[in-house]
View: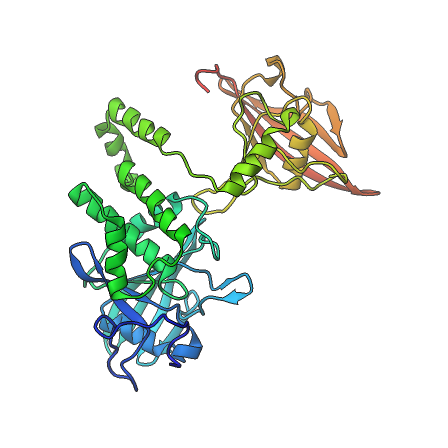
Length: 429
């Protein structure tokens, strides 16, 4: 029992993974069958020292099963709860786990996952292992969107494999998030091969291998939504060096068809998010007519200079880049009544660059100008904005915007912002 962590999460005898060479062959891990392949995955508890001591038992399992890929679907700590402990070495660190030595060669942070590459050595033999930790699955919930998990799956499947051993997948208990990811992989493979899928049948089959696979209704719904995307939109990865060739081979009709499929796949919003969108839609003074309205889950909140009773709303959302969370702020061009909010947002979020896709702002009716003419200054709230043209080309104008705002009496902070304004027609934009 001391090798287990959660009540009722115990492997069945006929599908449990046996680890040879220790004081016991037991580890809380189960083989899971894949599509047309026995024992394609190993589902296991998130390793903890209380169950595994120095983690030697886990790494012996990795070596004996010829594992080359580990998919980790939890953060180490979520809220106040420890979900898993760090069972691997830090970058460039070398640690022996029993008779297996592990070195972390690569540790790269991306917006939704961390990619690590280890070298394992035992006696005189060396092997390579890829470790992908998905960091965007919130505790007791499901990811905000399905695309990040689908992209993780593609990245895992694109990694090279020498031994063709099982993929280890784990979260904390090794059943909920783990079952959702494995089912997504199985059913996508089945759908692509057979043209049909059996979702409840897949879950029942997994539960024959390990109890409670896919624990919650929200995870089960999320699986359905993810499969809609993975089976109807082309998700194949194209290497950078081959992208020109890919575009040459893709006709305009194929690109148009791809876009049509994207239009059909609308993200499902939670009830809470739908209610937030409804509330924000009522703030007509802050939204353009017919504008898309954000909810609350991924929009920035105004707090700088906010007075009691004022709304923190601005029509803007955070968007991740490939490597950095919330790298971009996508906002509507300010209205006359929201210029102060726009400037406040730029200062509050320490923006270094504003890219305007709307050329000649001064010529548009109903647009709020958030920068003055050259060498002049405007003041909104407690922020003064001074502008100077740095470069003027056929297709864009580059200006330097100097933001000065008073935080406390006698204290000023200077913020520089570069603005590219496209000098283009509406159709070109």
